[in-house]
Image (tube, rainbow over all chains, first blue to last red; front, side, top):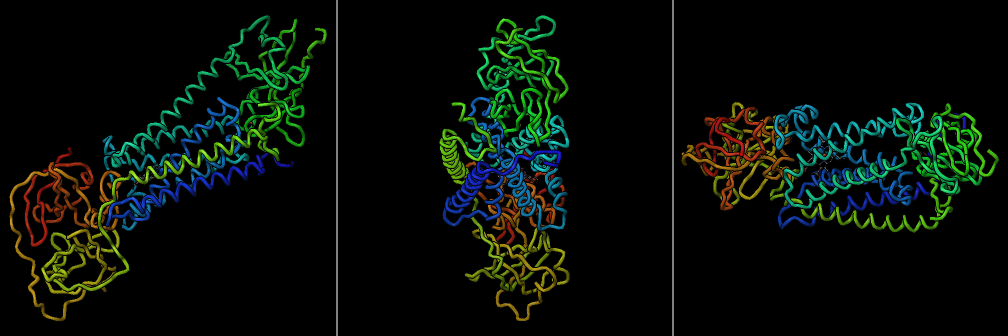
Length: 349
Length: 250
Ligand code: HEM
Ligand code: FES
């Protein structure tokens, strides 16, 4: 490949995933519209645009809630990892549905007047000093802006060019957007729709997202602190503690996590952080002699932390040693892509 | 999960165990989708009555006024006088476009927005919508005098009449606050939807000293409020007259 980044490309799985996603979105919109048309009492009816405003608003919120659950769920069980693989399509789609919601609101509630729609959105309800009266539209607008920046930079091109650190920080903005949207709904629709289903859905979204994140944060803080022994070496464990083709993950104090892999009788340590989107490499496997990221399948060679040609990604390697069947790793990283000979199980020390 | 089941997104084949899991979770998610969409749509507050067939443009004959808001006193189908409020096609009143025809017998062209006994005529832009009435009226449609009913203190919500009559459904509460404020700012008549504890309700057109309300009313629109003022009867309309200072939030 001649370009400086490797896009996660189209695959049969991705196409199948997208078909399911579109089916779900279509089904949601159809059911919401159909029930809204049928449900009102005799003589009453919703105006069609208002049905669409609500269908798209609720759908975008539910999708975002689901997206935020994928990360922690994939940590809890490997089976959810595949959802990570296509989170980008979900994210961009969610933004587009949110955009449709906002566009319809601006057209319907703020259009048909000689006041500019954006002026109307921010000024028609002036009660910024009140909680129950707060102009919740402004919160939705800021959230939509954040989602726009994320959707626009979601392509691997930006990831490669901004660097994973900046990119990751940018995409943490999704939590701010979600908080703003929770407030958008709590100070908006919930002030009007008094049926408990609305409050229940909002509350369960918040509770599930928070609990999942809290749980996985606690679970990963339980990863070995790693005592520094003889001259900076961290004890990893017995060679037999590392399953073949897999890794143990270490958390050195104040440094990036390290994944210590075993491939047959070779032991080698690399950074746990994937150069792509920061996926946990230590939760991946060795496939065809390469460490394979569980998120989108980027690969790295054990001996130098480089992606196999023609790819050009590089991550840090770490020196390892085996003494009396115990594996040690030196937490001082080598520069990314530096060759570091694996330790061999059973080789004379 | 065995070694071979490790999922690699870019691989051509998805492992068998994964496929079964996807099929299961995919179907589960679709079922959940239907349940949530159906539930949320079903439990929406009912939208309220009201209709507006924009395509059905016709003519009404009657007496027009621009004070306090643009209105036409015309004949109902049963032959009794009826007051229809007037609006432009969008979020504006047409009081300023009554001009020299104030108090005259006119023919007005527009489409009807109707909710129960409440009516509004949405008229086209330009000057094509109104013309002096050529024929003399059999029934006198001159606006009657305003009759005092008495001082009242009422709880309820300030709405914009056009949306509530049927232009938007639903048209109440927080979600519609900005739109209602935009309508009233544009000169559409504000209405007070009073609800008594015993469940009775009344819709009253709001005035301030007999004149149209100004922008000071806007922050109170769509909030639960209490208004003290004078109730008045004007033909078939109920009016609620009082200054903004007589409005308190509940
Ligand atoms: C410029 C941005 C936005 C504006 C002006 C806006 C405005 C509104 C308005 C006026 C309502 C009440 C609609 C009604 O009930 O008739 C509403 C509701 C809602 N909005 Fe937004 N919104 C924006 C962005 C978003 C985004 C990005 C999302 C989610 C991703 C969202 C999610 C919702 C939800 C879940 C509701 C409650 C359901 C409903 O009543 O429609 N909004 N929004
Ligand atoms: S994070 Fe995407 S492949 Fe590792």
